Length: 619
Image 1 (cartoon, one colour):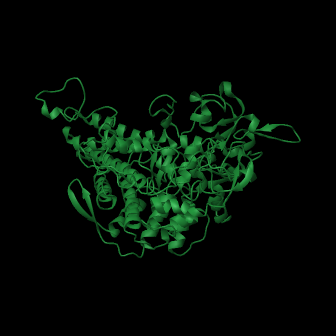
Image 2 (cartoon, helix red, strand yellow):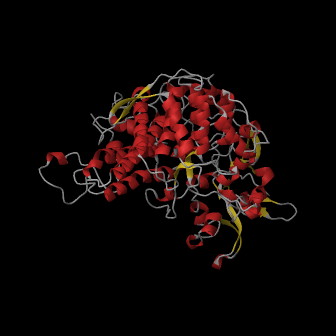
Image 3 (tube, rainbow, N blue to C red):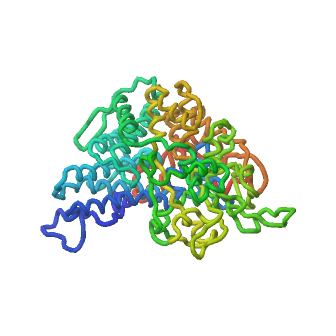
């Protein structure tokens, strides 16, 4: 029987696994493996760096990054992009344009699982002078293993998974409800108990990150798999979770206490003004951007990477390159993908008075820069959102009304003229640093770090100078999870107060609305809809109904207004057929060659005829 080579052969950054070494009566002096590595605490730190680097590997392919995939699959974003961007359309329509659309995501899941497990089961090869150091590193490895397995299972459902030093042969799919989630939650329970460091903003996991992710995993498990409905009023039985030390019971009260530990003891706080969470409020841009000029005048700016509200994030550094396995993962490519769609000058709009041609991303659309126009905001979200909520215009760029001379390019698709401010590239109008003194726009990161400036607006900086953290968990999310689990509106009202909104009472609908508006475009909406609907909810469940509202919404296609329609059938039907799970790469199924070990998800094979779209939807 064949084995899943992608799992067993997942490349390790600084070490390798050799299953045959145990059979050799010798010491290997020529390579590092689990027989002689790690040999020191520094080795474990190096291994752990390799575990974290997988996060950047995901970002190398944004349309396979869970955060971005779930944005496009939700009812808050369209696939967008250009007429040739069939991948983004396929993601947004829950179809595929090729059978291995998510192969890189699949591989990264198992790279992360393999690297983390290697640390977990070899950490005691080292003689530790300080037990707390050992426990912290073990806790981080457990956290990262839980994160990668959770991403894999939420994307692909019942996946091959293992909780041992190396991949077994064969490595069959495990049932997510009864096997995978109990292990995910067990890893997080143990991670929280082991970690003691409270450092934040350095890209490493803490006990509070583990407690927050535990709540997210628990709520998805209870809502999606157990169909618990409104969690505040549900009678939730204890969950038996699997830790390295054996079985433990996890109760709702324990999860609530974990959230309270994050809120009360984590050292986190809500950033003072919601707009300060996003990079357009930086000190170089704010003085020329009317929407945040009041912040600039008050001496308040972008809270920055690693700010007091962030609990866990993907970080970047200025070493990106189009060459290499993870090169472009070291910049925030999601910003590039989310920028204002820009074709060449011929696709621009010519002002009838001045005769000047305008191109998106330059001075006429300050402060937002060029990109590929993927994941544009759905018009239904703009219409659903009250104008008195500052988060609406703080999160969404109404390009037609906020920007001067915004252009619907001749190749645009599914573009309603609304863009995601939380991810968009941000520019600066003026710079005063050496040879680059003058008028811009310049990518603001280059102005903030002039020594690493990489060229003019249409040069590499347009594609690579994006280093804003990708925040995976922040305090506001934790506070809203607390209100949703307890039915106590206190924490929800603190989040609302930050947005200048009056206090309200708890209701299931109120907390749903609050999560949608506070956390828009942060990769959580799609799975919130799934857990509020429960597995096998059919075409009438909340997720299916919400997604189907996209049908008939207004969009611009190649410069003309039209309405959205599904590429093959309907959003409700595709959701009901798949439960929101993605297509397992066909290459992996063929590699295994045994459906008892690995088989395709429902809705992606002979049981459905509408999963394969050809070309780009034409409106």
